Length: 113
Image 1 (spheres, helix red, strand yellow):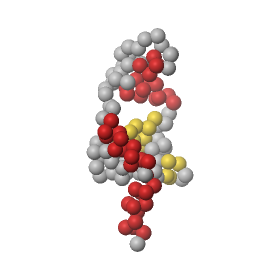
Image 2 (cartoon, helix red, strand yellow; image 1 turned 120 degrees about the vertical axis):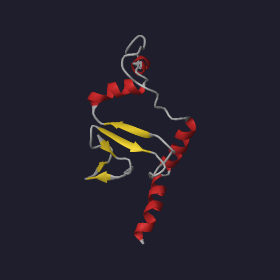
Image 3 (cartoon, one colour; image 1 turned 120 degrees about the horizontal axis):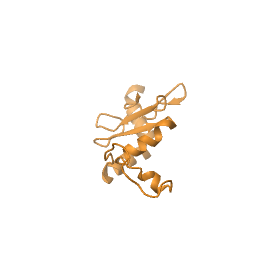
Image 4 (cartoon, helix red, strand yellow; image 1 turned 60 degrees about the horizontal axis):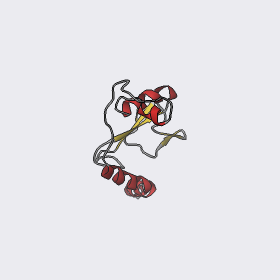
């Protein structure tokens, strides 16, 4: 598991951080470069974990498989929870991601003097 909380938009040996381990994590708490007050994102970099993480994200159901037409009905198949942020939090976060280059440039200005 790779904690990339403070390294959004950064690379190591031409590979994006958050993409080096089986899983990558980015935090959006108030001390980070991009913030939403709370919350984080999980990056799944290994196909073998994709199905289970989708089930956990889907509150323990195989609902995503149902919507893709892979099963006739969905049911609870594993543990899970509700990890969805509110719409206002996602809007606030998305607006920052759209301006990521500008935000990163402004954060680096004090160090370029």
